[in-house]
Length: 113
Image (cartoon, rainbow, N blue to C red):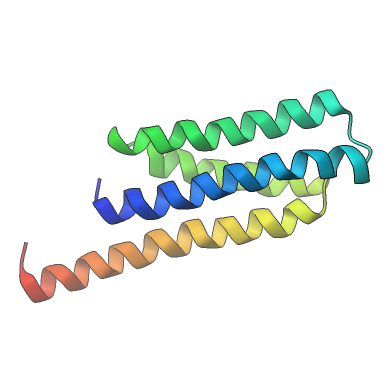
């Protein structure tokens, strides 16, 4: 796992966890979602984000983080603002990892391995 992938991926997932947790009160107050369901679903998704950060040392974090992005997008069905937030983080996730790969390729071309 490349250092750049760890940095970008961890940053995106950490901020995504915060955004998910901050959406819990919005779901409860503005969208009449049961507190138990909102805390359970939001807490679980946020916890998955943090667990995936730990997976960067083992190599399974990128596929797991990529699988998490549609799950966050789906929360927009119940809490419409999460559709925007989920799309934003999905673009940051995919775009960030793509840019890191491109930067690594350019670095290798210019400076060798």
